Amino acid sequence: MHRFLYSSLKTWKNSSRRKPLLLQGARQVGKTYLLNQFGEQEFRHTASFNFETTPALVDLFQESIDAKHLLLTLSAYAGLKIDQNCLVFFDEIQLAPRALSSLKYFCEQTPEIPVVAAGSLLGVSVGKQSSFPVGKVSFQNLYPMNFPEFLLALDENELLQLLENHPMDRAISKVIHQKLIDLFKLYSYLGGMPEVVAHFVASRDFQEAREIQKEIVTAYERDFSKHKTSSEAIRVAEVWRSIPTQLSRENKKFKYSTVSKGGRSTQFESAIEWLAMAGIVHPAYQTRAPKLPLAGYADQSRFKIYLGDTGLLGALLGLSSRAIVEGNRLFDEYKGAFTESIVATELKSLDLGNLHYWLSGSQAEVDFLLECAEAIIPLEVKSGLGRQSKSLQVYREKYKPMAAMRASLRNFTHDGDFWNIPLYAVSTFCTPEKLLWLLNTKSQ
Image (cartoon, rainbow, N blue to C red; front, side):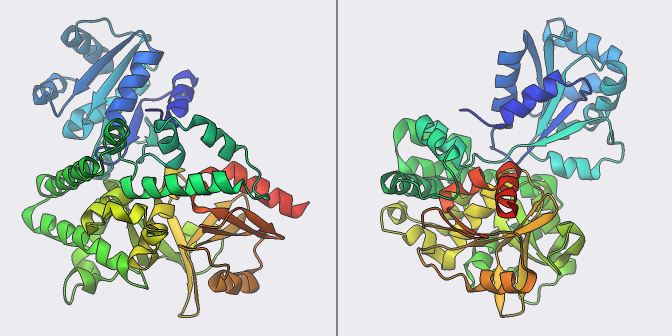
């Protein structure tokens, strides 16, 4: 299956400033598949070393992590000559701390050798590494498949091309709009885990897709106990299991008391950090003021937590596949939690950084704030066809943004500085390039 990150990997390969590359992402998002595909298509050979399937590989790094010494050792082990035409791929590198440290010496001593590494808990391991090669590696993030990638997996190439080229200020054909809504419902239920999507494309079996989702959830939960102490693992699991309940409330702000009666931040903040660094959840922080940079005005004590994949959220909630065909029920489920969650995952797939939202007491709430150039664009999410956007109007009257957006089930509309985009268009039209066009259109 095609992943848009592939083009970024090609850019990395041809860069004159190339460093070893660390590909981060949660378990089962397709890191190994993508890097193996990249090696097969862009290099003469790939020397692959998986520290999970072959734990003994760790011993190759015990004697020395000098890059030239390692190249001889790794070449002998792989049975091929490692040179500039061979991609070196360290998989599950978080299990080999000295291999992670060796990337510094590959960068300094053998920059001509292309080296990539991946790991399902790499973000966690990087945070713990005292000898991490700071400044000697490049990072890229892989997330579950977004809606455009899902369309490609379904062989809807022409439909995606039509969507990508459609102007934001004009409604799309009603027939095309409805087809995209129906496919977006399917995507919202299945999520973007490549194995789930691939099996559904082959079998069209919802039950089989749900079983795979449950297996991934189980794998995540096993990671809690494998990589944390027993008491820490319990707290991580408690946070994890509370997320569907947290999202099902009208006010989706994370509450420690929902995790455990009398729960406090000191008990659970490290568990939340672990889940976020593992790529399993995405926090969205309330901003004290919509000013640039948003990160500088984020209130770290007030946040929401979204699961990294709505298919897994549906599995945790036991959501029936009947919701796909019952009108707009899927988007209304759990007080719009599914709709807000899918927009969060679509925005994260664009790798724009942390998510932020705005809240004004009990008066108004704007679900997401998007940074673009020197502007902040508010994005309100609606699960239905309603035209009212009271919270967005409050924000616009107070801060006078250059542009304001709503994502809903309605077609594309444009009125002055206000833009409505369909939910299925979030990852297509919230890119930096499209947002900049939107701002420039307003200023003309």
